[in-house]
Amino acid sequence: MSNPESCIVRHFSHYCDLTEHDMDILLELEKSPLNVFANDVLWEEGAKADNICTVKEGWAYSYRSMNDGTRQVMDIYLPGDVIGMREFAFQERLTGVAMLTDGIVCRFPNKSMIDIFTNSPQLTAVFFAISARQQALLTERLVNLGRRNAREKVAHFVYEMYVRLRRTNPDIGNYFSLPLSQQIFADILGLSAVHISRTFSELREEGLIFRDRNRVEIPDLARLAEVSGFSDKYLNDHLNDYFT
Amino acid sequence: MSNPESCIVRHFSHYCDLTEHDMDILLELEKSPLNVFANDVLWEEGAKADNICTVKEGWAYSYRSMNDGTRQVMDIYLPGDVIGMREFAFQERLTGVAMLTDGIVCRFPNKSMIDIFTNSPQLTAVFFAISARQQALLTERLVNLGRRNAREKVAHFVYEMYVRLRRTNPDIGNYFSLPLSQQIFADILGLSAVHISRTFSELREEGLIFRDRNRVEIPDLARLAEVSGFSDKYLNDHLNDYFT
DNA sequence: GTTCAGGTATAACCTGAGTTATATGATTTC
DNA sequence: GAAATCATATAACTCAGGTTATACCTGAAC
Image (cartoon, rainbow over all chains, first blue to last red):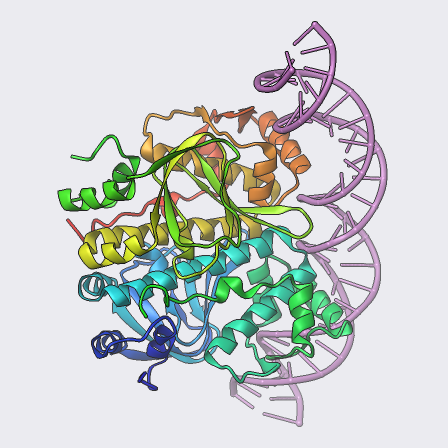
């Protein structure tokens, strides 16, 4: 049914069954794949925002650079994710976006969204759902930043990544790749890199998370979910009620 | 051109000129106004999420309650704002929503969105833009929580409210109503109420913000914008490039 | 009027996380 | 394989903001 070549189609199929027509539209958006490398900047904050980007392979992140040299990372993007919808109604990029790993991305003009709105209510609903999901992720990140301590922040974020990865990769197990430096962890969670290091040491001593370079092991998933106050509700989205 | 009775129509007209047809659809969404009072809960976290709500009058906020009794406030909603789109693809509410003041709200079923997707690409674009704008606001809140100190947090948030109010109320001046207790400030900015009090005292001594109960005076708007590192880019959204 | 409940201000003390510094390991470069 | 660079670990010290406590003020309830 779904096109195994395209992780966008796979991702979108999560929301509802796509017609051939819808799949053709989606594949059209992926017409111009571009190879990119780790640390490549897809765009800078303030750049003209006239296109949207899908991630075919690799990981990316969006960030805002502060005047004092620090940064705040907003989002991590995985294969199948859509980047840049945030700026649909803006002239300029509100955040920069860069690659965490090598990968392949596909850009399509913002105006294509208008065509989709005109031609496929169902695809429109999926894009709307994805925008809503991104809001939900930001909402949870907000809770993380505002009302959790460092240990909970790290535990919660690692568990969130596990759940997100499991969605497209059900057999992920409890030992998986997480190509994020401690500096990126710090920029995501509003902490210093030093304190991230301390916190991972603490979590290691507690037997909650073993992190070695880009690999992470979670010996007891349920226990990590518990100490981080994790609820997966904000990741359980679908459109089953609208299209059956 | 725009219907002065409806602040939703006024708010939506900001994005592009609406046809009679579109306005009729919008007014239909406002068919069942409901009087609500300060502190009324529109819905609790975890409640069934099958409708969307527009604010006709009054202020509201969305929040998440933590296990330790603290809360994190996500958003403040003003007249004309739309609440609950976040949960379009979710079964349950991810955050509670309550009123800050007396007001009037209008609920309509989520399914109406599908009708709009089917009948008006232009209104669809506006809803999409509004969802994107909410993401932009959350993004900025994230920066505020992650990478600013208490003084900057308060200054930035107050200035943001000023800019948001000015959008629908251009002659607002530098003395306006802000019906938020120090406890709500704390819950928005991830601080304690005590420290909010300290911070307002500090800002008062610096002559940056005078707050008395629910009124705020900003003697020097430019200076406040500067100390808070405020850029209004994330509030300057429109659809002029798509529909002229 | 009096009482009561919220909201606010300020002080004193404490602590979680920032900062700076140094050391060690891992990777890449040439 | 030596040099350079990047990521990580840990210690020592500092400080912004949390916590607890008390007092005052204002408006609502009676």
